[in-house]
Image 1 (cartoon, one colour):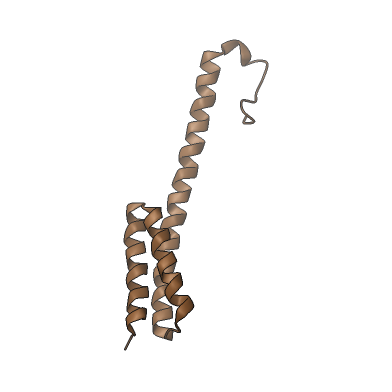
Image 2 (cartoon, helix red, strand yellow):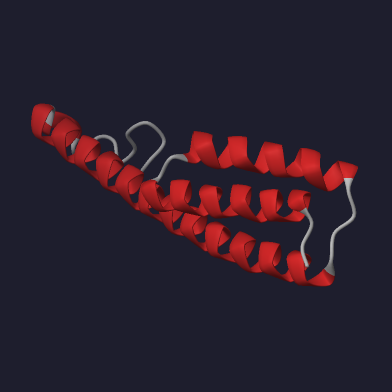
Amino acid sequence: MASDWERSAVALTEEALRAAERGDWTIVQHCYAGRQDLLEQHSFSAQTAQRLSELDETIYLKAYTARSAVVVLLDDAAAMRRTFHRLAHPSAQGRARYVDGHI
């Protein structure tokens, strides 16, 4: 049977997962900080460690996906900025192929 603190650690991690699904990374960070406090003060069972590890993997994948989406959006924004720059400065097209360090 899991101890109270183990149930609390799992609950915090489950809350972090729900926050990650919403994209609320501040709450995710807050939940992990609370869980860290519990883990520093207590030992835990192999079963709890396995459950936390599974939840952590799911949260990691959500964070990785969100990060990848942001990178794509930033790349798209940079491409649009370069296009707008070329449209606004048509005479500069032949002179320079670099805008803000990008091709």
